[in-house]
Length: 396
View 1: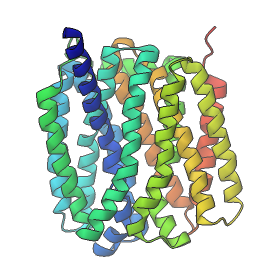
View 2 (view 1 turned 30 degrees about the horizontal axis):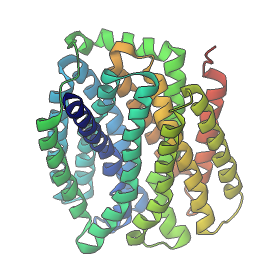
View 3 (view 1 turned 90 degrees about the vertical axis):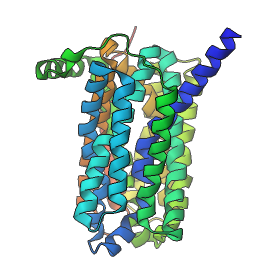
View 4 (view 1 turned 45 degrees about the vertical axis):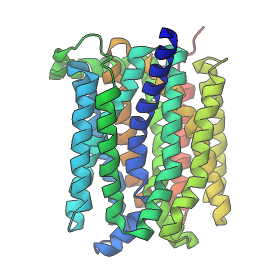
């Protein structure tokens, strides 16, 4: 009976961690159908409204560094609860925002405070390592992949039934549920609190050590740059769908969910492969799929495709991202050792920083057609593959 209780507790913990990990994807992607309506309601341009995505990436990058350090210093559980409570308050503020500048300010606050669930990755690393950690991480990634299936559809539904403000109200309610559940069910997994890690000298030294480690650097860069290509769709997907292919904002959620299925497929495939193959082997497979996506998007950039053809190319890139996420995140965190909280935060910050830069690039390239997204995916996907080939260490 003791063994059964242990198994059940472990399963419930993984479910809770997966739900927390999904909050980031949900927070970004639930508002995708609302970008155009927000621009109309608050009297700003569509490119300006798209800043709600890019600004979130930038704030999230900053927030992840804070919460990882705080979790190493003061414990995983209290810092997670503190961040989620702040996210709850920021969501309420966004729902009540009277103008775009106020909404953007609360969106930035959401990004900083909503970064706290990155601590879930550190908890996984506290409890396991290597392929076992990668398999658990793939469960978190699968849930993060399911969020894009549900979030835009849910956002579209709330948009039709109420307004874009209901989307932020929903995030407030969901975060409240997670706060209560985590307070009751989440154990403290940090073996030793290390307040000294908040010192700037430690931060600079540990950052230099991690980025100086070839395994960490290559894994984190491949993961972050692949995500950046994905971020181009998050930034401009609904706008391109409306202007280039005449897909209504209210319908974009369902359309996005079709492609997002491929993220889930990728992470589940990674989990299955990791049962019998090494991180290096699965990493090489994921780079092969990413290469296919880059070639596909290159062809699309040279043509004027139908929407199904364009969205099919996006789906292939999403499949590659699903494979890359658990594999290269776990590979990089193996090099973090006792600083897994800081390592997870650094990887997350890199993801969001590259995502923000991708948002700037795709917005700058946007000409009313699909080409901005295709070109961005070609450039960033190709760069991720080049880094893998040049920097990724091979184990004997």
